[in-house]
Length: 80
Image (tube, rainbow, N blue to C red):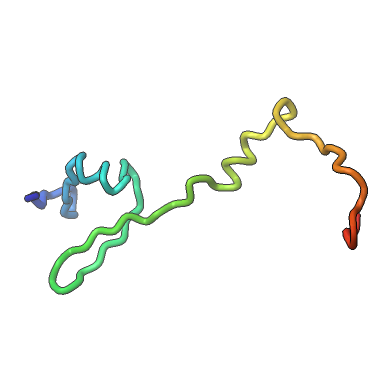
């Protein structure tokens, strides 16, 4: 697939076609790594975790928090 480098402010920009972005699971504001390897510009998406703990905890409310439940007494060498 061919592309074109264009001016964007004081920088140069490379537009990534939707089909390639979809294949690489890239979207607007995705973080990438750029490097030159054997004379070629290599663009690699940075994989982010599917969930961040902070984002998950922000969604916990009094209405959806799980309460403790009884699991029975200790068995064998378990310490409670």
